[in-house]
Amino acid sequence: MDKELTEISKYLSYILRHNPGEIGLKLDRNGWGEIDDIISKTSRFTLSYELISVVVETNDKQRFAIDEEGSKIRANQGHSIDLELDLPVRKPPEFLLHGTAERFWSSINGDGLNKGGRHHVHLTEAESVAKSVGSRYGKPILLRINSLDMHADGFSFYKTANNVWLVESVPPKYINKISFSVD
Ligand code: HQG
Image 1 (spheres, rainbow, N blue to C red):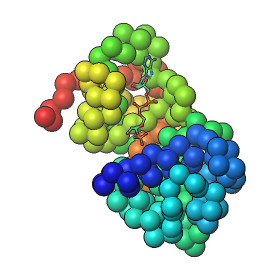
Image 2: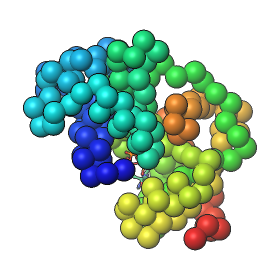
Image 3: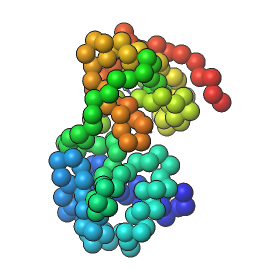
């Protein structure tokens, strides 16, 4: 992604996930905002429909979705504001992965995975994704989650449009620290 697209992506993440009020934007209860409103209320960049479309399409993690009519946009995941992503409950695979930093391990081993400031704990099927997510906080470690056992025990799993698995929390008994096999 070129630098301007990255800057716009960060800006859209901020207003769609955390602070639409910063530009006086209204999101509906499922997190959708009118693209025309974003364009007219944004002063930091000269946005256009085409530019926003390019940001959405080229985004490295497919962070955003445009609705079927093409008039609204939302963040696929990662919100801190109160909303309902209206995702269907899904049966997870046997295992899912979570990448985190070594320095968090003793706390996670004691308390399990907590959602922190986000709405959910984020899990992935891809080891490479877990590694890069974990690397943001220090030396990465890989956790394998017994997701199918959790599902059998009544935990609800959701999958976002960009293949992130979401769950409210992960108690320690479902977590195993394993080794990376990818470079
Ligand atoms: C850790 C990015 C201590 C947790 C990525 C993580 C992802 C604990 C950190 C998305 C803990 C929270 C989310 C406990 C959890 N004790 N540490 N009990 N429970 N943690 O950023 O999963 O670029 O909120 O392991 O791709 O790292 O934003 O969550 O290290 O999909 O689109 O607390 O963010 O996507 O960190 O990342 P985060 P995450 P975007």
